[in-house]
Length: 80
Image 1 (tube, rainbow, N blue to C red):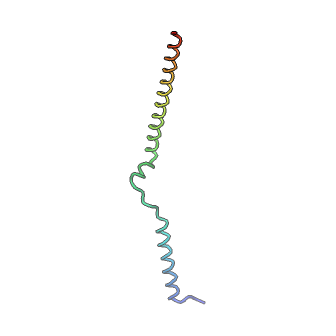
Image 2: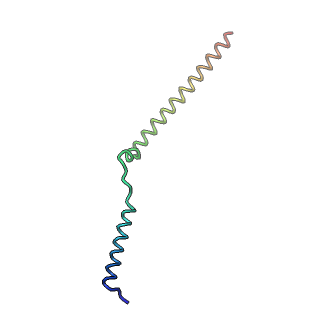
């Protein structure tokens, strides 16, 4: 039994509405420029480099300070 023109038009309208709803649901949310900036690979590379350098500098300082304190304690105890 073939569809009447009114039924065809109704089906077409429903399908158009479904497509429009799918497009609205599938669009990606707009990202701010800051969000895009922080996700850029070059930014992440530079940030990683700086944080690694800072952590290394802090660890080196801590280790040298500890060694200096140990040396001072050794020298003062051996002088007695």
